[in-house]
Length: 53
View (cartoon, rainbow, N blue to C red):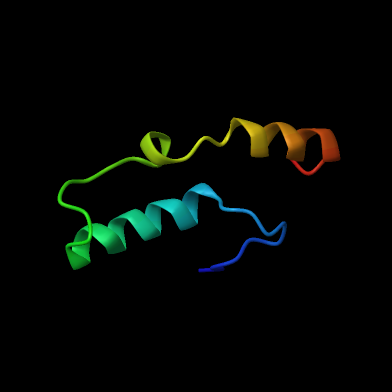
């Protein structure tokens, strides 16, 4: 898994892996979704403007 996406931003795959790792290690008490902790719409719009989506 590429832990740092090419554009230098946080992507869903990395977010999901981080949340799962945090749950597995006990840092999180309950499962959470990426949408509960990250707002991706600004990143998605910027990438769309730049033509990378």
